[in-house]
Image (cartoon, rainbow, N blue to C red; front, top):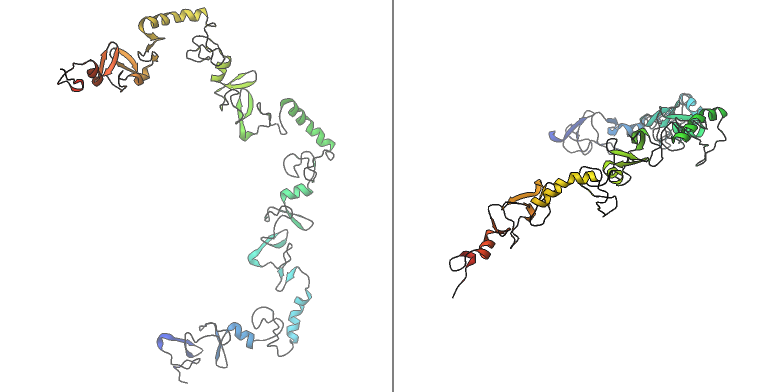
Length: 410
């Protein structure tokens, strides 16, 4: 065969498709392992009797056989298809230390076994804790199945536990030990069971002052005071201080209207908290000049829908007399003008002036059509106001030549 022909197919090899290996020219698609048909290159091929093989197949077919040789590669193999003789004495001597190690803690090559699942632990999945190797997913608390690491794991009789479960199961019990952690607990290890049988006399003596203080002041273990509204313990994150007491933020509300309060908006009456408005309505002075104790006018007696003047003092009547007299004489009511349309008081924010009088903005309308008017479209007749169109129609001249007031006369 000429040097420019492919050793595999025998056809000519041109420059664009050539592959050089083993001192020959090959087609790129012909340069494959003769056993597994894997594509090769000049670095991955080996030759045997003029044929090209990948290194793995070459080792399996033509490499050394026996214990310690995985088909000519790294590993263990005793492939019967290619074994032609018994292992040599040298190979047996090399394998003896490995064969003598029959315990389950290691595998071939010295790989440790996971204490939890018993399977080999390789480097990529290894985590070290309690002087042993574990799979990362096997290093879990034996009680709550929480994933652990070398900082959060504790050991008991060869098994791994998180610190919380270890404390609950194997830590000290009794008052002052929250399952072995910081806190208070009477946990006996049995679900929902709390007992004082295992509390020492020393612990009882230490706890006595705290229990007495909590009973006398409404506090809880650790000194937390009770909320004045609900009686439950008030902790720092939910605490609001008012009237010299501690409250839950959601409990500091007016006892009457349930409005949320703070230390600047609350008042106290017989141990209950009120907003300033409700306090003045319920417990403030009554009568003319007191809008439930606020700066308004009120005759409120504290009962819904009832207004009376019986509880107005002589002093208040004397103060109100000038206002009442001015109101009768000038059409004003307690310093405010009276709207001639609805006869209610007109305050500055809602007033509009027209025809020498003061109206509500909503009342400043044409008497006939109800159209809103202003000072430029206003016409007045007999103390009533009209728009120009209605005024002309009703009170303007009649006859031919007068707009909307047009009438034909005979």
